[in-house]
Length: 77
Image (cartoon, rainbow, N blue to C red):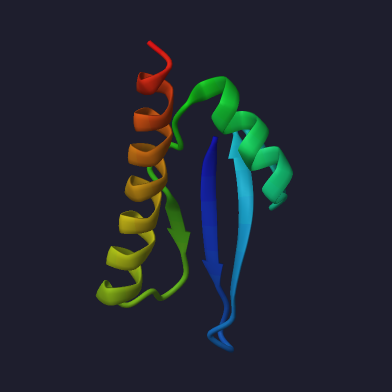
């Protein structure tokens, strides 16, 4: 799953979920279910005029989630 961050002309940011070609409204529970199954979020996609700081923050958040999920599942081994 990939999270897609959309920034509109009013500088409002919304998030959708992308699985292959299917795009759905963001749902936290569905994201967790997918993380349990795949154990990884794909590189995020950003649509709109994001600042370098915003891009860095979003990418760091995804990396942090992936690291925590990976560490959680490696403890099970």
